[in-house]
Length: 73
Image (cartoon, rainbow, N blue to C red; front, side, top):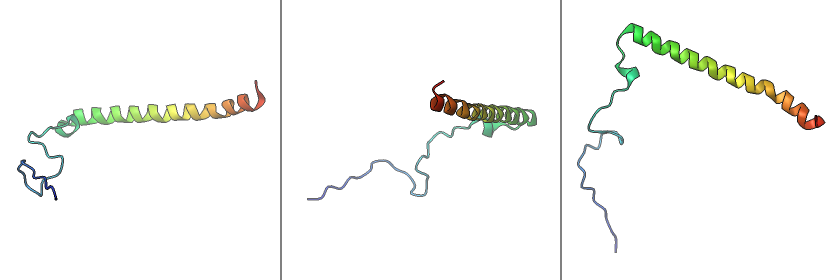
């Protein structure tokens, strides 16, 4: 005996799997004004700068942790 499941949903086979009925626009996509785009780029650059500085700060602590663990200070 073989069970076959049939879908009751209608749709086109060429539609993407995550196709929703109501399109949702992201803020970054709906920006048309050059000032808004420039503001978005500045915020992204600041965030990236903080991420890089934070990673560098943690990497600077690695030798200190090594010294503490090896010498038992």
